[in-house]
Structures are given as structure tokens and as C-alpha cells.
Length: 71
Image (cartoon, rainbow, N blue to C red; front, side, top):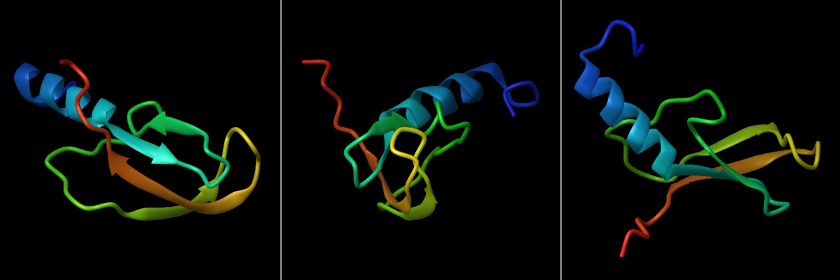
């Protein structure tokens, strides 16, 4: 995706995807971008049924947008 979109869009897409987190029921969290996903101009808190790379369990994992902590 980054190769075919304008540079600014790609940078914005990456920055926003890094703000979205995936949380397993075991407490392990990682970014959507690190999971190989893109979440750009999105809303809501969907759930995914997938295997956790940390605990190995297949559970419903919540996707949420982390608050900016730049202050």
C-alpha cells in the first residue's frame, strides 16, 4: 500500500495504525501496524477472534485506539 499511495498518505496511515492497539485477554498488547494491519481513518472498537502470539490461546482480542501521551 505504501508504494502506491502518495507519501503523505502513507506516513499518515502508518502513524495512525501505530496508535491502534490489539489487546488479548492475557493482557498482552501490540500495535495494529506490528500485526501487519492498517487501521486508518477508522472508528469503533472491533474484536478479532485470533491466536495470541504471547500466550498461544485463541481468544477474542479487542482493538482500540490508545490515547496520545505526548503531553
